[in-house]
Length: 404
Image (cartoon, rainbow, N blue to C red):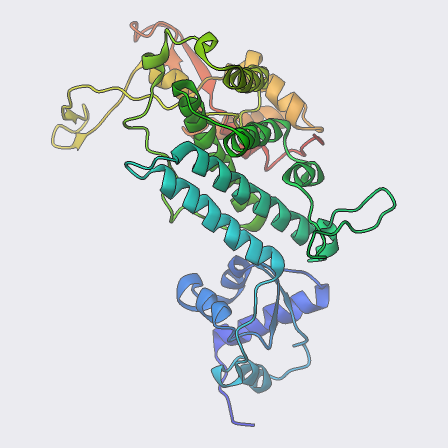
């Protein structure tokens, strides 16, 4: 055996893996960084992707690992196993990881096709690819939850036999069945079924009207936002390096359709629009706005100008201070929206000293709460505090969610 040198970070890595092995716990790349001092991008991600640590790590998910037996190893033996000279063929991702990658590719393709300047099958292509992205993501979630057992994705008949395709391969569950199995948030379920309905109408007949184009854009924008949220939550994968957005320019806008009546649509289009409208009306009754059926994009053209910060005349800043902007950012009142949302979301929530202490602490975060004068034009008048739905993410850290 060639002599290998150990170093403090590698020794910390050895201690960390030994503890994980002893406790039989899984961990992420971020955990390795925290307990060893190795940089994430320059070392951990590189060594994992090149399988340099294959002898001491076992990948169990896209960003989940377990330690191989290392407690008995000396420092030199551990260093030898971590050596590049001991590398094997690159370790393949588990099936859930492969599905997550394909899902991300489908979502990016949907967005890129939609954003092409003169693409003739824009809305239809987006819906088809985005539904595919969601189906693959849900199946990756189910596989990960079932320890990569592919049988969890197979369709079965009433007798429990596997349903097979024309080629003899097992048929996998439909996206509707995957939605049910994943036990998603009700609003997210409604959103996905709205997207699926657009997809089905595009594939089986026709989606072709100004109002439908607008609704696809609104549902599509919400879909990208919902998708990013769950990829990060389920697989600790940050997709912020991609520009996930749909261009709002040169499309139909609400002000262009104010006098538009769905009665001028074909029966098929009327049915589809009413279905989406019913889902959106149902969503308005929900206090928890983590997910959305659709998101409206509002744009307006105004003459631009530079505005100077009042406390620093030499600094140029762009400031938007308007009552409408404040209301959009902080739509919740304390008794009318915030408290009902908390009562509905958590099974152990109670208005008391703990809550008031947390609320006071969280209110200091302007992403969660803001204060304004009740009379916008009277700066000396009474003030009132309002809240953003983003505040729920902070309360999530301290309370237990109720089952959906």
